[in-house]
Image 1 (tube, rainbow, N blue to C red):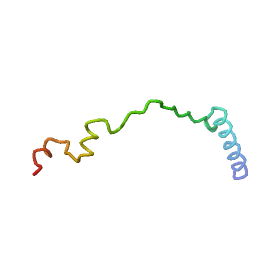
Image 2: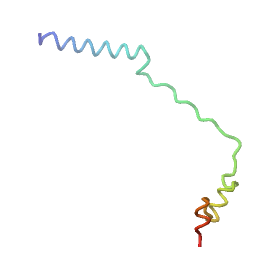
Image 3: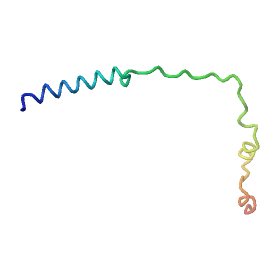
Length: 67
């Protein structure tokens, strides 16, 4: 029984590797190319960015509790 287990194990491993390769699980797919954005918006143009630069609180409780 032990004499047949080693070749059987090797055969199962080879068959599994072949079937996974044939199914496309083992090949490396090409990575998608990054898109180039031409239009760039100013991240500091919003009201939230203005509050952040001026260190203003953005929650109503923080506005009320400021001394």
